[in-house]
Length: 197
Image (cartoon, rainbow, N blue to C red; front, side, top):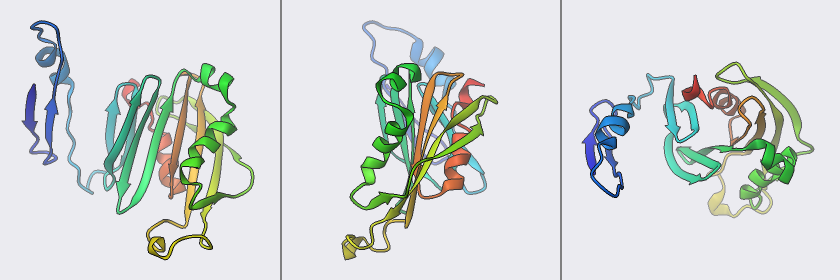
């Protein structure tokens, strides 16, 4: 067990490494690779990386939750009740034989179906990733159900949500993003995989 405090970010970090016998991987390999960045608004984007998922997100977003399943990783960030989720699914060639890209997009939207409804058909989108790889996929906007929204929720949920479903064929993975700001999601999409380069 290693416990430390970072004066850079003001955060505490605990690393627990389980091993059958005395090994030096914690101090020789794991700890030297840990990096901290100041979580201030002077930093344009904070880099996050865990296992094979890496991205950069605006400094005013804090990590809220994470899901780390084999081949399906996601990080959810929050800023004043505004949430952005970055999800990576690999291997994409297997995932797409199970479900087409549009179904992956719909599955991501389903988490918010009680309060939002999708507007029309998904639109095609293309962008360039962190390693100059081509990302191609779909985007769809959802709008808040004002008619069925409880009064206590009024003003607490953003009026729109966007979901991106992108295919990174070069690295054989799907990138799924959802959040209320289209420009922020596209900026994050361009940084997914920055730790590879």
